[in-house]
Each structure stands twice: as C-alpha cells, then as structure tokens.
Image (cartoon, rainbow, N blue to C red; front, side, top):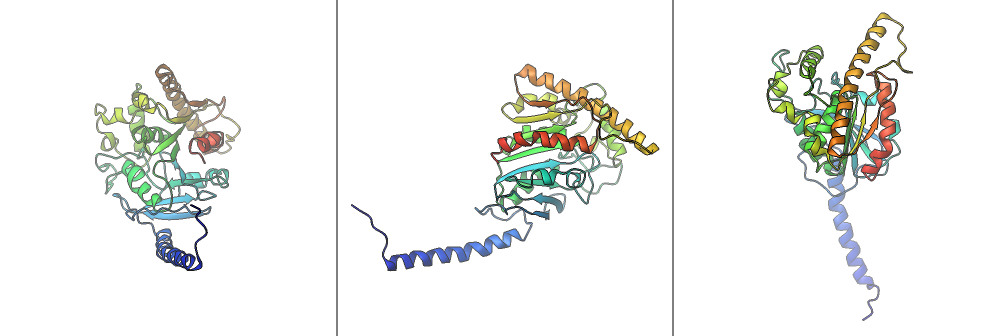
Length: 331
C-alpha cells in the first residue's frame, strides 16, 4: 500500500502540535540557560554554541564559581581543568596564566574551570581545617562528580563524556577523580602531578606544602598517615583502576628552560622553588610510569628535557595533549 503525503488539514494539525511543543520547550530552555541551579531537571538540548560564561553552582560548600567556555558547535563533551595548590577564589588560573581558552575556542568541547579549592586536592575532606579557622568542610569530589555535572546536564553537557586535567595538586586529583568515577571521565591528564604519594617523605612534603599554602592541616583532609584515605587518593596504589582510560602524563626535568628568565631576587627564589617541585614531580611520575608498565596499562607520556613547575610549561603540555583529548571525547 502506498502512503502519500498528508492532506492539508492533517498538515495543519501537525504544525499546530509542533508549535504547541515549541511553546512549552523554549521558555523552559531559556529559563535554564539563565540560571545556575544544580538541582534543575535535565532537559534534552544542546549546550550553548561558543562563548564564555561565569556561573555560581550550589553545593554542600555553598555556591561555587565556575568559569565555562562553551563548545564551539554545541557539543556535549566537557574538559574539566583543575588548578594547583594555591588556587585563587576569584579566577581559575587556566583562564589567565595560559592560553587554554584560545587553544580550545574552535573545538567542540566545553571547558569547565571551577574556582577555589586552595590546598584541597579536590577531594572530600573529613573535617574543616583547624589550623586556619576554616568554617566548612571541603567536599570537592562530591561537587565535581555530582553537583556540578547535574548543573551542566541542564545546559546540554553529558554526564559521561568528560575529561579531567590538572597541574601539580590538580594533576594528582585528575587521576583520582577519573579512577573512582569511570562512568563520568573518558580521559585524564596529569601535568607535574604527585603520583606516588606513598613514597618515603611524600606525606610529610604534602603536609608542609599545605601549611605554606593557606595553613591547612592535612589531617583534616585524609586523616593521619595510616588512614586508608591516603591510599585511596594515591595514583600509584589505585593504578589498576585506570585500565582502559585515555591518559596523558607529563613532568619536566626541573632544569630551567625557555620560560625561566629570573631578574630580581624573588625571581631566582621562585625559579629555584620551581626546580625542586618539578624534580620531585618527575620522580613521582617516573615511578608511576613503571607501575603502569608492570600492569600493562598504556598511557601517553611526555618528559621534556627542560622545564620547571611553572604555568607556561603546562600551557605547552595542554597543547600537546589536545589531540588526544578531542579524540577521547569524540569532540
């Protein structure tokens, strides 16, 4: 039996139904686009096509500022960019210390850059830090894997097509988040991260670093050194959980390079500090590489001959990782 085109009256009926549906959906989409309510019900629509936006997303820690560069063509993929130990409360340093926004401006992936989290390791803490009078308890893992994805879903971003990349503290955290939330992340990148936290002296080094960066008490984060939370957050320990994950792992030699040009005494101090931090990261990252190798787990590695613990080197590594990120997220 041949089915012909619908008659005029039938086409009018279909058009009326279409207009009615549009009248219901468009205000709903417009309302969602103008708010930052994580609890809103997900709506099936595309993310905004391009542009930069700052939103405040509700969380157990209170409203968290998130800087977002939307996918160029409204795609549903997202890359979370995590900050370092001295994360600021006004801006995510990826937005002003690097050209990350320009690198991905024409790509079909949304950059998600949470603001804040100094010395947090982007993890759920056990209690507030009692050394600096912290009023609330950090719950960053909950935010990044539950509250923020719920909000982004209302804006057209997938819960399951994401990557996460960070530097230093954020590099360690990126692998931790991806390992424990494989349903959310398809890619993880660590740039100068600390990936062997159980190595001799590392727990003491983290304790000292967190005291220096905001007077945070590490015992409030993962408890005393024998607490099992230290193992849960150690990439060297949970490495088997990374099997099948697309990974980019980098650390430089610690030797000054093209972006190190000290002039004033403070510059020489910062360069020396950056050299020591990068050398420690390199030792951690090499140990992690061996660990993955013994498990037969592949990853992309980058070990530049020169480079310190500094933003311009991480900017270059982000660019090197970009093709792999886009491929993993089909973006």
